[in-house]
Length: 293
View (cartoon, rainbow, N blue to C red):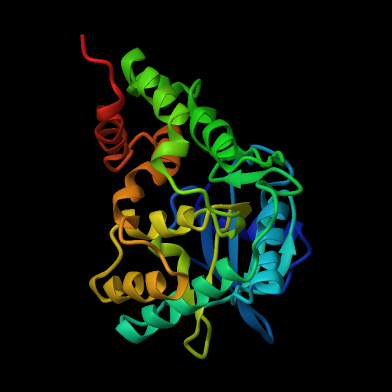
């Protein structure tokens, strides 16, 4: 079935019968997406999965958008409809290709992270990272939480098991054991959780806005590492300096990014046939933790 027909049927089944046309969009990797124009109403962004892995995928995503806005002061699209079959949001605009936008985003992200510190790690419910459930069981220890629910959690996934040999898996376990020596002891804060550059857009008046969250209370560097490691555009370079100054990051933060980003590389490896180099990145980061005979 053509994508436009598929989404139009989903919209009408959800009660949105004023849709005139559906125009597919690009940029996402896990879901089907389009802009739907309507009779006498603003266009909307529509997101769906052909075969949702659970009933709560879009409900949890919608909740994350509201949390980022209400708790963290971050602009997010308005949630118009969130159900099992689709998510309907107000339309944002592409981010402008300017240094000033990314400098503004540094202030936005720093405000989110500094203003939402929490005594525990996790979230009140599980949510979704792509098509995989993100376990958010509350924990007092951030190192244990990150090891169990953000790294070791991916072992056992078929694509991960096929890509990593026993030596790689043992190295990952060894790295997890050493996390308190490798990373600073930071408090939890509200994190977006899937913050690659494609999820940074703009409001109609040009303010930074975020989409596609997998929120939890976690280390702020989980978000920073994702921006750092996913080829941000050249105009984003000032973002890192401004964010580091606003949040008083130490000079070693860049050295930690590969370890923190392991979580996202493992998630990509688990879900996509083309891992965009994630497997190589994982093996390179694990290399110092292998036992050499």
